[in-house]
Image 1 (tube, rainbow, N blue to C red):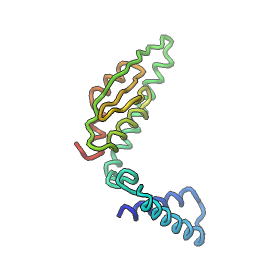
Image 2: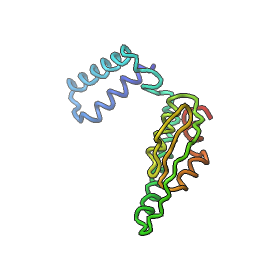
Image 3: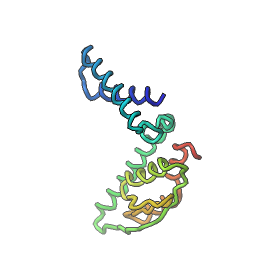
Image 4: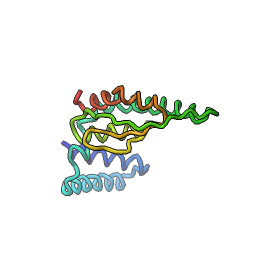
Length: 157
């Protein structure tokens, strides 16, 4: 099932980027997508981490939530940067990731980094070292809201 999904995704991606829909080019795109999927299987990269189709349903709610969090953080960072007093309070903190898999920890670390004002600077097992532009950002992370959402997305909550 993963191979069929990967080939379908690659073909759809090719169609979107190509913009050409003649029979010959669509057939060539389909053949290339199938060959690329077979090559991925042969290279052993079409696994649960390389093509995580099991996360598709959770992604329908997680990615809109993450986009909203990014927008809220971008607004907060914009207010801090434009304030003449520049009220920054750089903070380093360590947060514990409750995800069960390395993929889940990776998603959590990248979600932190995508959110303006915070960046994951180190990962050691399930401990993430995070730099925050303001102390409130670190306190928010320590509260565990994003950790719970990532665990729910991963299916471990």
